[in-house]
Length: 143
Image 1 (cartoon, one colour):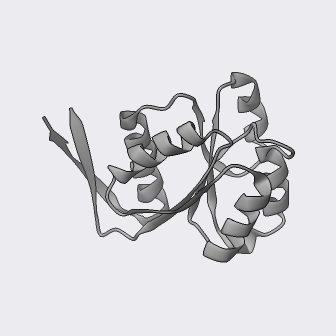
Image 2: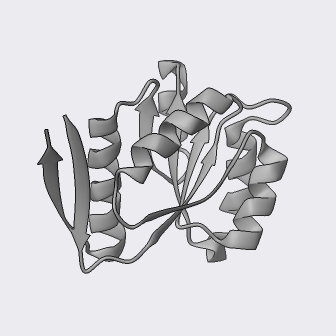
Image 3: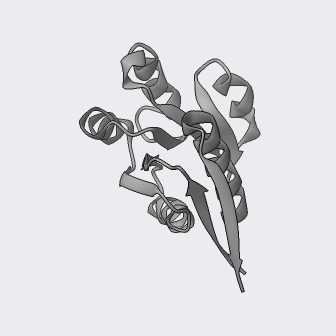
């Protein structure tokens, strides 16, 4: 079963995907492409590239793995906390529950355990759009 998520009175949601594993980034992108009004500004695998993308493209939402090479996702969030003018939201993704408690110290929108299936992405993005922009989602299921 496939679904197409449509949101009424929507704004385009600009998303950056940050994960060191290419296959995970591709999987997230494929799930998000099924949701209307999502614009993926890019996919990167480390904190330095993420920082550049954030400053150059100003996403609304950053989906970030906590376990990244050299500097982890918390390191990036330490930098971003000092710049509230960026006005972005964070979804943490991780394979480990041990990071769940620490993520509350930051400003993430949600914490998701990998792997995340299509239906869960739909729920999270619709909730985000509703809270951020007042979008009212509707879902069409396609058999």
